[in-house]
Amino acid sequence: MLENLFLDLENSYQEMVEIRRYLHQYPELSYNEHKTAQYIYSYYEKLGIEVQGNIGGNGVVAKIYGGKPGKTVALRADFDALPIQDEKDVPYKSKTPGVMHACGHDGHTATLLVLAKVLEQNKESLSGNFVLIHQHAEEVNPGGAKPMIEAGCLDGVDAIFGTHLWATLPTGTISYRVGPMMAAADGFDIIIQGQGGHGAQPHKTKDSIVTASALVVNLQQIISRKVNPIESAVLTIGTFTSGTAPNIIADTATISGTVRTFNEQAQELIIEEMERIIKGTCYTANSSYTFNFEKGYPPVINHKEETEYLAQCASAIPGVTAIEGDPDLTGEDFSYYLQHVKGTFFFTGAQPDTDGPTYPHHHPKFDINEKAMLIAAKTLCSAAVQYTDASLKKPTLIAK
Image (cartoon, rainbow, N blue to C red; front, side):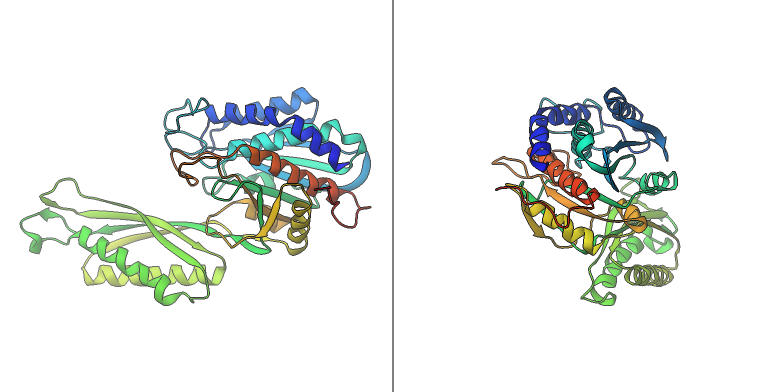
């Protein structure tokens, strides 16, 4: 059965590429993906697949019912873009100024759409049911997963699988991990209120830039001196904004950044230490402050049985190498799905075939190896189809 499904996916590969390149040219930012959502909805509607739109916002959910009884598996793909100017020199370059698919979500969408088409074409011989979750707003907290779950997208689902095309991982590789896979993604901003004045008279001021600069350095001590070295954690200052002229001492300074952790204890420790250091630094400078900390997505924690099962499925696919990867401190709101049902999230290697540099995610020249979409589709297909079939005790080995 899997051989036939894989053959259908291979025959549909060019359609995958065409869909991905179309979406790449017309990206939409988080919470504004109206045309993309309509494109997805229309695709399913034309195939006669049961589909609902406006799920928890711009989310789209389609359902395919197999001809035999079995479990219900959900597969998820996100479809929002980023506020980045596309600097690639390719025919499918973004046509929307300042917006591009710099994280592979266009590839995720194309993969799931074509996989759904193949499942629909073969549904009479399949067991169980398949829920195709197309999620909006993955890039911006609070994200699209939570409202989609609240709207019922996981109702009746036994397990969920999802993947992220990973441009810095060799194509042909599936990276999986039991337990913590991706980190909690939190954000913060700190406003230092000093007292501005003339650049030639610093003694009559409270220099917010000097205070904020000390704070940038002092906050790094949390990771190096407060967090257990066995733990993985990151505190990054991403912006520093202050001043209006070279001869004016700035009245205020604002810094913002992100904190990444894998457990709640480390997260709470960092928040507590940040408050203490900010308070002490500002006290020393005789300045006041405002500290805002926003908890974002929780960590992605994969379920053991489903992850090991996924690894078996991937290892059985010709041309695919499954490896146990390291935890990654990037964040993903797929974490919310895993809090509600069993499942796993994995990386599909999508490193481009090029002699030049490989650009990371969220880079203006980011791109993927489109062959990775076919690998992702086969892996998701194998996991979903065999999981729904209760008669199978372990994944089928496809002849290498």
